[in-house]
Amino acid sequence: MLKRIFAGALLAALPMITHAGDLPAGWSEPTVAHEGTRVIKAGGETIETYYRYRPPGLHREEMSHQGMSMAMVIRQDRGVVYTFLPNNMYMETSIDKPGMMGESDPLPDAENIVEFTEIGAEEIDGWPTTRYHVITVDEGQRAEGDFWVTEHWIPIRMEFTSSERPGETMSMEIRDLRIGEQDPALFEVPPGATKMPGMGGFGG
Image 1 (cartoon, rainbow, N blue to C red):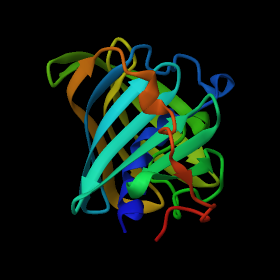
Image 2 (cartoon, one colour):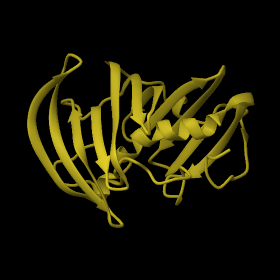
Image 3 (cartoon, rainbow, N blue to C red):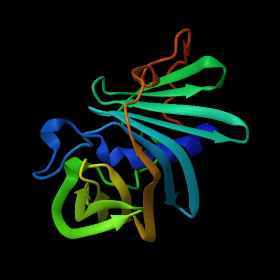
């Protein structure tokens, strides 16, 4: 159950997972290391994780549920996702593996953007940001919404609707954002961790 909940929390990071050649004109990955509390709302549920990012393309999510702790690391440079489980166990999954989340991802991927429009400047949680309106189309499914990014391209807030989930607004925001260097060891498999066999997704 914890794996299923945690997989949902990871979805907010997925729009940022792209290869450099896939980025639309004007789009950027975050350019500085940072951390903060990430709040994801989707499907009537609210999930909080502690999020860390180290450029280029290293993401880490940490969460606890009913006394159990997990962490998930996305390594864009290696094309893998590490899920760190209790008892020093971990799973390794390809970023590109179909059905990695066990269901359709509710937020869009950057490579599927068909429209990308700057709306203007707004302040979010004390941070000056630029708001962008984004439309994506993937296999006939349309997603539309807004991103608020800082000058360093940190996506401090996202709000999206999808034709796959009509009437539902999905959102993500980073609270208590702090810019600062992140320990490289946080994005590696812990020493002595035991790798679990592939499980065909995060359900369980």
